[in-house]
Image (cartoon, rainbow, N blue to C red; front, top):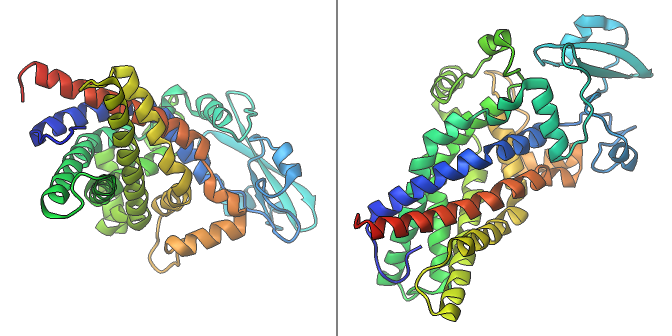
Length: 379
């Protein structure tokens, strides 16, 4: 981050792009785990059974060997035809049904070739499940979408932040105060959400949510989404261009909140350390630590926005059918009612594990790249 001295916007472009490339390469598996956790739903008869977030018995005894609980009376004797109605689509897996009680049946999905996967619902269990069922590289699904958007995203984030900060300093009474930093961070987050983040994340989430093996050539050939460009084309063809902006409101709120808190905390801590050390630059390890700490503050407050955004962007809208989630507030109410209020914080652990080291790497790389460009005389 530049201090009071204005710097060339191209410096922010190159340093930000470099930081984003390094960060996404290292941390993308954690984002895939977070997305899978947020998309996992427990559909149950709430008159007789509650989900794992509000039912201690289920929370203590829960296996991904039996991930679907559905109140489908027809499953008890319907065989494969009934199973098709249950919308269980996991390529390469066989399924069997067994009646549990009157009006209930349990659909148990098991791998046919790689052994039964038993894992907890936590981030490590989710990672184990993905790797065993789909292969190690399944953790990198959607990475092409991230790479495609990372340079313009980081360029817009850092350039717009600096430009907004300069405008506030030159034309408002805020000067270069903490309030100005917060406002500039908020504006930069909103800007990147509209121009880059929302379309890129719609494509990324569609690719991440595919349950296909990365080691089975047959499944690879039949996957619906293969790369970011094909995914974007398919979405536009089937659902219209507007589908690329599903979840734009929660995405704007999430990005605005994140960047406002992130830039404010980072710059405040950086300024205090530089004044105490009486130096002009941070050591790389200091940028790493400050970036990680500041990066974790926003997600704790806005995780419900991220859950709603993920559900909206995963949802495929068919003509003539009412979608389950229609907006930010309605989606929050539906999720809380069906799955419990704590379901709005699904994925917070992998999200923190993803964002905190991600922001640490981003700020460290950004500061290092900026200093290197200056030393080499590029700016």
